[in-house]
Length: 315
Ligand SMILES: N=C(N)NCCCC(=O)O
Ligand SMILES: [Zn+2]
Ligand SMILES: [Zn+2]
Image (cartoon, rainbow, N blue to C red; front, side, top):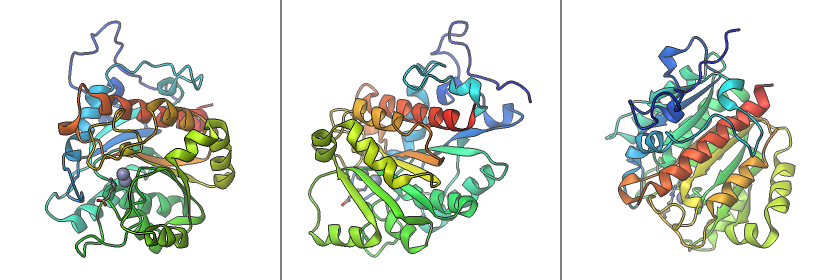
């Protein structure tokens, strides 16, 4: 098999030159095979508060220009271990949420047809539902690690079923999740009522709050999460608002008291060797960002997700 085609060499071509692909990787149409595709979903018609996540994919690509090819924390060169490419953006209808959800599912399913894994950059959290559907078509119901300030298991908003606050309720109803292995991490902030928690528990979720992470520490947190996941096929969905607004101001529904980017990255590194089958990073809203704080964090999170695939499949 041919050697993977890696990113543009930033010691030869300045990293600020040329159009942005994720981590300066080749585009999908420039490679013969693709193990992991980074794909954008510029969709934010499902938000309940601040918009702008439709600009997330391009901002994360811009913020990813400084990523380098070796990951010392995981001791892996992800772009040498696997062929990673930028698959561009999935085209989806900004005026019809139901149709957008179908378009995302179809596009993700065809990208994954040859065994390519996806790391998706959103877009608001609505996009997780069609992505989970396409992953479940291939792997059956998957374990879920959901990093978020919010539960996102609400039933409807204004009667709408597909919104950024409801994807995981729909996913459980549709049977695309393995209800023995569902965890929210980083949960915090006011709820509508205590019933939100009762209903979430009834759906099968366990909750590790933001305060739990701080009180228990990272090793205990990682150990408990890994025990729940076991060797099941795992999908990781990361709403960037899991980070404290100090670490991710550029998002639609910020909540005080969140994780630091260091904590999030360390928890992700603790997943090395898990049976990862798909992942997303969502809710980056560049119009509310400052100095690329949020998109830099999201770029590093996406890089860690690609690196987890490299550890699992690249050796
Ligand atoms: N950011 C996401 N995904 N969901 C937040 C929904 C919270 C709300 O509007 O009540
Ligand atoms: Zn959220
Ligand atoms: Zn969310």
